[in-house]
Amino acid sequence: MYCLVRDDLNLDKGQTAVQCSHAFMKAGLLTLNEDATRWAEYLQESFIKVCLRVPNLATMLECQQFLAKLGIVTAIFEDTGYPQFLGRSEQTTLGIGPCRKSELANILRRFKTIN
Picture 1: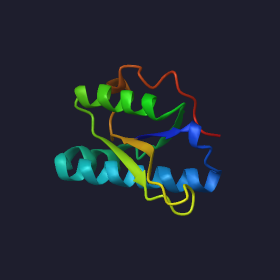
Picture 2: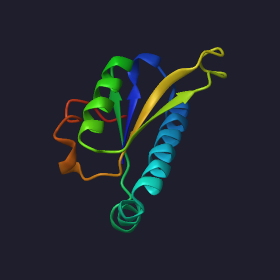
Picture 3: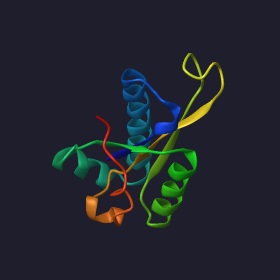
Picture 4: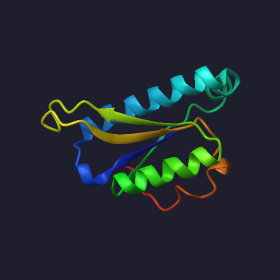
C-alpha cells in the first residue's frame, strides 16, 4: 500500500503519521469490500506500506484520477480540521492499494519518501 501526503500542508511528524494511518485504513476497508481476495493476499504476502510526499492537492488528485483509470483502489482522507487546520476541512492524504509496485506504471517514482 502507498500513501501520498501533501507537502504544502507542512504537517509535523505526528500529524503526518495520523493522516497516513487514516488513508491506509480507508483504502484497506475499500479494498476489503471490493476485493476481499486481494486484501487477504496483501495480509499474507507483504503488508508493506510506503509514505510519499506530493507537492500539493492538485498533484494528489491527478494521481488519484490516473490510478482510478488503472483500476487501483484509492481513498482520499479529509481531515475535519481540528486542531491542525483551525476547523477547516482539508484533503490531506491519498491511500493507494493494496497493489503491486508493477501496477503503478511508474507514476509514483517522482515522489520522495517521508523521512
